[in-house]
Structures are given as C-alpha cells and as structure tokens.
Image (cartoon, rainbow, N blue to C red; front, top):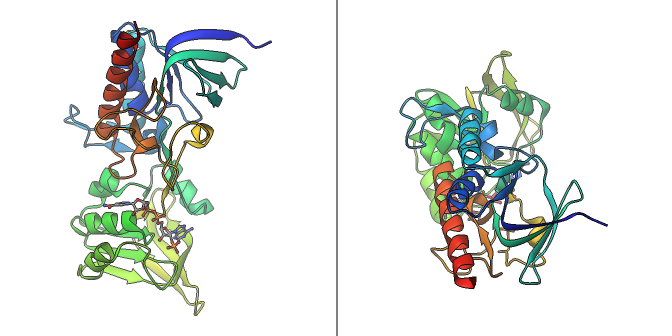
Length: 315
Ligand code: NDP
C-alpha cells in the first residue's frame, strides 16, 4: 500500500519557474510541496555568471542564484523535497502523482516547471570544460558577453544556432559556425542573415572531434570535414552548442497536450493554463522561444496566480 498525501498545490521542478511559483503559492497560503527533480536548481546550475537577471547589478553565479531562490521559497514554508515525480494520472479532478520514494500525492493543483535539457555533443572534452565553467555553453544570450572581443565557435544549424551566431557576432571578433550537413535546418531568413554577416564563417559538413583547452579554459576546437576527412583546428575561447533542447515532459504526454517537439501547449495564450483543469505550466517546459531565467520566473508567478484563482473559484 502506498502512502497517500493530499496537497493543495504540487510544484514539479526547481528552476526559476518552480521556485517563483512556490514563493507566490506559499504566500497565498496554498502550502505548496515542491519536488526538485533530477537536477535541483535546473539548467542555471550549469551556468557560470548570470548578469542579465534584474536585481543583481554585480551579477551572480547560476548556482548561487538558485540557492537564494530556494531560500526565499523556504522562508514562506514551501515544503521542498529532494526527489522527482515518476508518474502522473490527470484523468480525474484530483491530480494523482507518484514520487520516486513511492509516495502517492493527490494534488488539487499542479504546476509543471520541469524545464528543458540542452543537448550537448557528448564529447569527453566538451563535458570537461562545461563542468568547470571553462568556455563551453549552450546559451549564447546567457554567456556570450564573457567572450566579447574574442573568437567563438557555435555548433548547430537550426534557428537557435542561427539566432545565437548572430547574437555572438555582435560581441565577438569572429564566430565560426559548424554545420554537420551541407545545408541549414533553419528557416531561410535566419540562414540568410547568418550568411550575410561578415564576421561569421560557416563550415559545412563539419563535425567536432575534440574541444581543445589548456586545462583552465577552451582554446580551440579540432574539427573534421566529414566528406574529405580533413582535420582543422579552429581557435576559440568560447565553444557554444546550439543543437536543440529536450523539454522534460515525457511523464505528462498521456494527459497534457504537447506540440510536435514535446513542449507543453498553452490552452489559452497569455496564461499558464494547460488542457487539464487545475494543471498549470511555467518555464521552459512550454517555452522554446525565450528560455530565459527571468521569463521562467515570470511564468512561475503566472502559474501560481492561476492556481490560486482556480482554487478560489472551486470554493
Ligand atoms: P533544431 O532541432 O531545429 O535544430 C538542431 C540543429 O542542431 C540541427 O541543425 C541539427 O543538424 C543540429 N544537430 C543536432 N545534433 C547535432 C550533433 N550531434 N552535431 C552537430 N549538429 C547537430 O533545434 P533549434 O533549437 O534550433 O530549434 C528548435 C525549435 O525552435 C525549432 O522549431 C525552431 O524553428 C524553433 N526556434 C525558433 C526561433 C525563432 O523563431 N526565432 C528561434 C529558435 C528556435 P541537422 O540539421 O543535420 O539535423
């Protein structure tokens, strides 16, 4: 027999969206329970310095910001749990969720803030410099500024890679784009913009063999032309990966409407409502466009307010 717990508001995920939802829900007396998920603190814990979150004039590291958000959610007595939700059943009015510790939770409202996971190439050298904050990043808008006046590489050929290459081109002396096929996946207009930017060099049919470094930070990339087999070293201090994200929404797919790439669809644009009454979404699980900490926090606030109104209307 599993242990059943009844809660007013269950928040799944602990990035800026989840913690902001928790702060609002806790202050509205909804006694939220928050499951932190596989990566407590979310994607920001893999970011070094965050300089674009309003309110931190001197910047803050991603992990430090998440510690502060967690502390703020705890201050209003959010029940924060280390663990994750493995299964849900949203077929009834009460939303059933199961945690990895075997607990069965019956929630009146659920806020999904499970985020998305950036894809990486998976090379050992890439992971090494990513882990040490030494020049590998999956977010040009977050980290591009640290490479101003320097040379960077970006991997990918989709709209994100084009958008980020263009963003980097305004900061960096040179941006080299590594495209694995002989064409872009991006929309024509985005690809044209990249092609027409002087300080962006595009290398087609090119794959990364190794991210090079001096043990402290990235110094270049060893790349190979997959048609000719020719290897080249591209000097750079920043190695950006823009090969897509995977929204963490698999466990909801039987109940929640997702788009063709797995992102949760809003039932009503401009709200946090999903197709299931009492289930709301915040942050990157529904956002493939902005993906910023501040937008995630904003939608976390919206989800808590929508959940509060839903509960008030039921009473
Ligand atoms: P996409 O899935 O569209 O593109 C991923 C790119 O990465 C592809 O070019 C793919 O290559 C490449 N890639 C994947 N794996 C590897 C690998 N191992 N090595 C090298 N290259 C690799 O992801 P995006 O994040 O670009 O876009 C996601 C969605 O968001 C799209 O629908 C896009 O249109 C949308 N979007 C819209 C924007 C806008 O409108 N402003 C901005 C950003 C995104 P290949 O082509 O060979 O498969």
